[in-house]
Image (cartoon, rainbow, N blue to C red; front, side, top):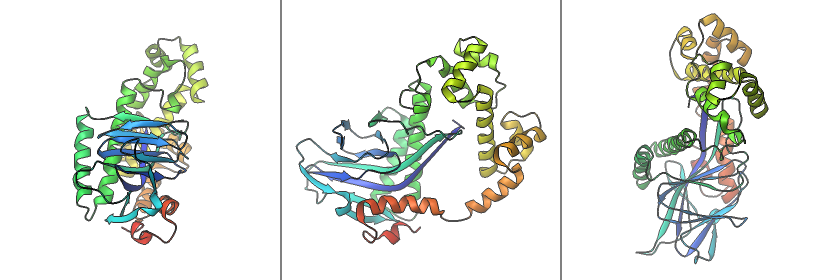
Length: 334
């Protein structure tokens, strides 16, 4: 999935007892909950309720207010803004109250997220209601879950960064599994009636460097060349080879940012026969040559926080606590 970018922002821990509901406000970005402990319900302001249990991942559309509860009998409502406390290493916890010995509880790791393919289209922008994925049978997800639970039980230096990385890992594993199974209904970019395009799309997403052609992609879709090109352009807004070019540029840009590979090796790795051909295509896509792009990316990476990331964290915290509550300064610091 070299074409997929996933980021988890504004990470918090939510904890609710069996007597109350923990109410969370709408957010501008999609939201993800990963269930760490216990079972219960997630219900939206529109009245849609979904059951959740350990290893469940729940994706929520943007602007979706909701609450967490252990059971339907819980009637007292606690706003997250009135239930905020520092957990350690800059993490926040939203807790519904005191927990009785022997009582049930529900604990989730929660964060706003962005998940996009290389052409910038978001995967959850048109999601209309909560989407739940049970990851209990996934060994990689379970291992990440167990490590996350250990970290959050005793927060220390680096816990927040590691927990965010683990949530991101779980999310990528879930998306990969759904795409591999052909479960494309949840992804607005892929939600179209003619599912014959799916094998061709998956081939490009999985191996953008491969020598794909209109003919080979049409064969995967079991369609004629002209019909395939026409349908692909209708669905994705661009011809298949242009879409493939964007995937390759995206993969090349990522290698430039994250590795020390030479530009020539990167050109080969993303499917170009020569450095000059890759560099020309890269300049057309990014307005700069690969070496300059790498230099600027490393300068940006050296900055500890970007304005955008700080604003995302601040937005979640202030939406539930107000600007001066719950040690906001600690939350925004490393």
